[in-house]
Image (cartoon, rainbow, N blue to C red; front, top):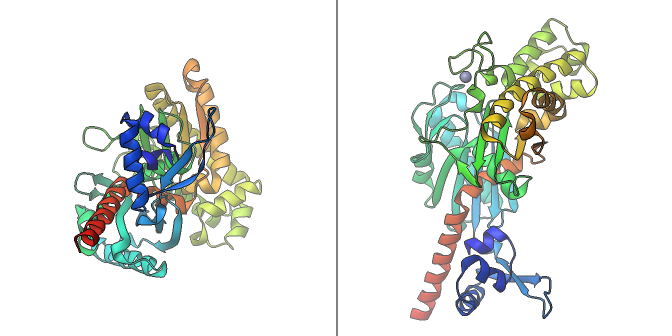
Length: 399
Ligand SMILES: [Zn+2]
């Protein structure tokens, strides 16, 4: 089931190659899985001379999975089938500032409402994957601390969800869940040395080395946003000075744009916000840059240069083949960031490493971020679906 899922669609011959099981065994297993409705025949593959082979894929309707992407400002909730197709989506404010107890209770009821809206019963849910910002203890799914929201210290996110839902639950940090989406649904499927950078309210990275997610000895690898790029730079939410995130994150840019609106340094931003600094957003900064606003262009350019400097460090250290930049800032103004990023890399990275490197903007959106979180539990979801189907069959046979 896991091999079929991973390859999306393949023939029995392919399965023999991938598993190294005998053709007889593969054929017998496929017949059983087909009879149980766990996989299905989805068409014909390319012929290698004889009859074209029948292709198999998993039956996406054997269960449902939930993905929850908890950002600093907004939470995205998706219900998918086992192939990752979104069946329902909802975006709600995270309200992390009210404290973890109330915020999590409210998010859990939003998950219930999303499931109810999609007509999904709780016993169809095979797993819930949660992506959350902040620094996480992965083994227990506990948010250790979240620099931007100090109340979130030692919050057992996984346990809170387990108390409500009797299903597989996994928690991971958001750059990693977004990177999982990029690997399954986006541009990251081919490169084995792949770095995903998320620039939104915060800045983080997910590193894939030799095709495996690299998490570090204690799970904290990828805190890209707290790489120091300027010893004299602004104070960061983590308490240090000159972190990349202090210059680059959406909140840092919004802060500077707000000042520009109140001081009328940008006529375009002033018009777009109606002169109200509180209305400043990343989307409006991106729009102002589109309209050629000098202030916004140079703000984004500077952010892109800092991002590029950080990336030069990663490139020289890890020699990735592909870097994908995603997150809300990339979505709103990526084009302006990318030009400066590419220039910084051209100017500073070691030449022979930079030649084969591709730097791309993510083309995925918010629904996909939540779909990425759902991927955390997909293997468990497949197992649970198989066991569930088999035990039901046995019960029928037992009767
Ligand atoms: Zn920092």
